[in-house]
Image (cartoon, rainbow, N blue to C red; front, side, top):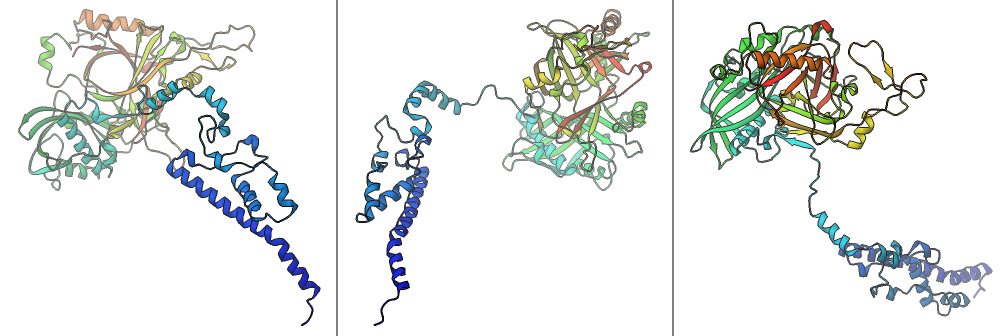
Length: 591
């Protein structure tokens, strides 16, 4: 037999010497796999006593991981005869894996990783832990509402049947106008809305031959005529019930964009008396009869209601590049069907030489931001909508610009606050039907600290300007301008609030004015209005909780802009000459 070559002997010797290292590497991998399996099993079962060892960061240099420690143990078991390297490793004190899972009340597994048992005893308070567990299951009483659910408002939908009718009818309308019924309701069990084949419908609106006697089919046919058509159900109340036939009075707003070159916006308000059959088993409401009436002295005069809104308005044309035409809050001459009651109670009368204007306002859905202001007239807080009243931002330029609906006027009321210093400033903005057609309306997310920072300028900000009516001079409050008086920065507003409400019908008297709501001249104008309306003509003023007349200010030179999904996102303030006297000071009367 040939003698083995030197190269063969070297290969065999290398294989013998490297075999323990290969075994140790394989064992380490197996140990890591076993440790990972133990971790996964412990996390699945939530058993803390069976979790693998956790190493404190302070001891990471001596024992890197469970897998490495387990690898050393395996090497020691398998290589008892491996020589000096094995004996030296056995002298090192290793982690006792068997003792690691014993919980004696002091050396709890994992405590060293989170600071040790001493730190645990200092921070752990049993009473606080129990209280924390209780609070997790209790809803916070101070949770801020982020949305307004219209059909859950008892002032607008006072009974269960009225709520069901309002939800079902709005869902059917939205399906036709927007091909979307999900946004009209806050609940998923909305009743289906159907029309009886023998439906009786009396209305001042025109009827097309193709629509027959169906209000929904007529609504669908009207979409092709108007540039835009929106309908919102504002309230519904049951007025009569006979078995499963219910008589429900529904209040609605209809907004249209007329197909003329200047795209006039017209708003029609009114009520409908519905006879509805309730099929409770199938969760279906069947319309049997409908009678529509417009607000105003003549509930059938659709031409008169539209004619005054279709002509181009001077200021809309003058500012035609600023915003679309405005949807105006309707002002009617007298309350509908209440002339006899007004004359009987000596209300709603206007003298022959009176300079004020008497108007009836139908119920409207409004958004009402408010705050407590301590800066007085010089702060000029009331002349612009506050930041916490907005719920979205509108893109007015670019390829993704959004369509929006401007409404006017913006109403401001200022009253004294008894429990605080300063005045309560409250804005009231009518909501257009396009936005009101949603069943859930967003509320602004207010951060009072952030609002305070935005509303109060920095001490060194030289752009803090105070203007008064009639002044040609502007005062700058700046410490960097020598020789001029330095005024303290305005105080931040307090008690920020914003909500939606169905504003009831009102009878108001107004006088024209060209200034702002916090001008000194407004006080004298209020006195003049009160003397003419109440003392001379005998009208009865509506009083607040403190027994004072309720005055307000209309900013007709301001537009609040809404999108259908986002809500109030922009305010536009137009320039108008003082000669126009566009704004108004008003007082609310008993109606």
